[in-house]
Structure formats: structure tokens, C-alpha cells
Image (cartoon, helix red, strand yellow):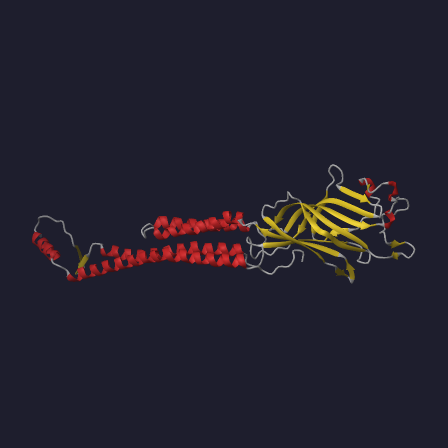
Length: 403
């Protein structure tokens, strides 16, 4: 059957005219996906293992079915002597064809010249992702196939129905496959039309990991920063330690997650969340700084009021309290005690004014804490409502991952 068969030329090539005759070869393709091992946001690619199945008619391989041979199963060594369409994957980064323990290839020949060819391939394919809603996003990862050297006049690639089948054991850790959309993507290269087919796989990211590892811990850090508002204004070391701890925790958490993401120029949903959480914990620290400054100013004034009073007369300094006993100046001392015991109206008024100011400013500092106890939780709740409504309902415009 293979006598005079040339695997270097296509079935519709005419040696006499040195051109193609008749209709182009129709290569019907199908995928059977075994696994999608990893979808990497940092590299914007995915790894997929699948069976690549092809069907075409080669009139040179027609044989008589009257001998009772319904199908001929070829050995891998003989497959090299059969012409195969030069289909390649446009968005492939790296791929291998399995050869353990033997090359994972299969080829069946039917009496009417139908050739069924299947190979097992594992490859890394690019997937241009839109991360505006990350990690609440949906992605479209594509696979494009076309002939490398033959134009549409010689080979036409088309999908079989269904275009793709998924293994029942297929399970993605971070995504769910919502649907797949096969399409035709014939393109022009240097004015020559090439046949092309594409498969768009629609993926929805699972939120569970990000809720437990990012959203809940960062929200708890924000709530922890509000404990500052319930501590007394005098607890300066405790409030400073708590404020700095929450700020450093948010900084560390943001750095650890952003290091594993692709560097993009637009703002992601995770950027908004962590930035607002950082703003809340930093605002709580600034609130304590303002309260502390207000309290310290009045406390300093109160301390000045409690200092011993000195009376300066004719350049001589005499203290209000004299502990001398006996001596020739005993009369002078008695007169000083009498003068000291006399009511000083102006000093009492000043002391009362400072005491009233101290109480007023201290109450002002406490009121700031009381207002913050309500304002910060209400503002954070309003932000959560707006955030989840926007990013769960809004869908950015996105083209297929191959474009």
C-alpha cells in the first residue's frame, strides 16, 4: 500500500503540474484535555496536557475493504512514512510530545483513505490576562492552531464537534472552567491566507483562598487598630506599640502578595483593598498622635501650675516655705508665715482657670476617641459595601487571551 507513497508531499499535490489540484485537505481537529496543571498570573501562561486528535482524507491510502480489514493500526515506526499536516500552536511557549515508554502516538487507516492521528502533548501556552478584578476576576485563556507552511489553498483546519472534551478527573485548584468557545480565526500573513482555529477557555477564579489568606486577616488587622480608641489617653506606650504593629503587619502582608503578581500599570482590586486597609490603620495611628499632643499640652500646663511659686523681691529670691526655727530673725519668719497664709485672690483665680482648662482639654481628647470608635467602623463598613458591590458586579471588557 505504501509502494510509491511519498510522505514529503501532501495528498493533493500534482507532480505533473507542480501545483495543488482539487480541493484543499480538510484537517478536522479535536482536543481531549487531561489536565490543566497550573495557571500562573506572574508569567501569564498556563500548562495543559492533552490528546491532540486529527482526521483527514489521503486518497493515496485507500485500500480494498473486501479482505475484512476494517481498520489498519500502524506502528510508531511506520507512522514516519505517512504524511501528516504541519499543524502548530501559535501561542505555545514550550511543549513536549511524550515518549515514555514509547512515543505516545496513534494512527489508524480506514478503507476510504481516512487517517486518524492522535498524539499526547504537554505544553506551556501564553494567556494574556486582565487583572483589574484580581482576585475576583474571570479569565479567558486561548489555544490557537494553524498550518505553518501551507496556505488555505492546500490545508484547511476546522474543529470537530465537540471541539474539546475534558477528562472527568480534571480539577483546577484555583479556577473553575465555566465554558469553552471554539472559533475560526483565519488570518493573512504577507497577503497569503492561512487557515486557523482557536479555542477560548473561560475560567473563573475561586475566591476561598484569597478570602482566608488576604481579606479576613487584613480586615482583622484594621479592627485591631481600633482597640487604640478604647485605651486611655495616658496609655502612651500601649497605643504606640499597637499602632506601629498594625501598620507594619499591613506593609508585610502587602509586600508578600504583590511579589508573586505580574507588574501591571493599572490598579487591581487587591491594590484597592490593601491600600484602603493601610489607610485605615495609619489613620488610627495619626488619630492617637493628635490626641496625645492635645493631652500633653494641657498636661504640661497643669504641671507648671503645680510647681513651687517663687517671689523675687529686690533681686533676692525667697521661697514660699521656710523651715528655719529660732534665731534672731524669728519675727521676720513669723511675718512671712502670716503673709503666706493670707488669701491670694489672683493666684486662686489663676489656679482655677488652669484646672478648668486642663479638664476641658482632657475631655476634648476623650471625645475624639469616642467619635473615632463610631466613625472608623462605619467608614470601613461603607467601604466594604461599595467594594464588594463594584467588584462582584462589574465586568471589565476583555478580549480572548490569545489576542
